[in-house]
Image (cartoon, rainbow, N blue to C red):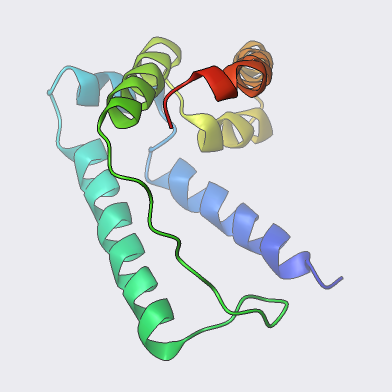
Length: 137
């Protein structure tokens, strides 16, 4: 029962992404072809919300749901990991038409062919786990 709020938040987030058409393959294709501002607007809104949310957490010293202080650990400088990771993520997103979050939303909407994508994402995560020590971080 304690984690019910996270389940409800997930359902609400899924409904919002579905209603905003952020999980639509056609909207994603429009974005990659630069034919529509729709997805870019959603992404920029998410970035702005994240930046504002992090600043509020830092200024008000908000704690997590267990009462622990939320800490933001600075990452090492370097561009290689961002270029490699971003390229892999973007290629996967462009080829499949879904990033990791909407995979579960699409499964919930009855798009069962997304199971193939989910299996591929799990396989990719497994392979990353094996190779992570050899990759730039």
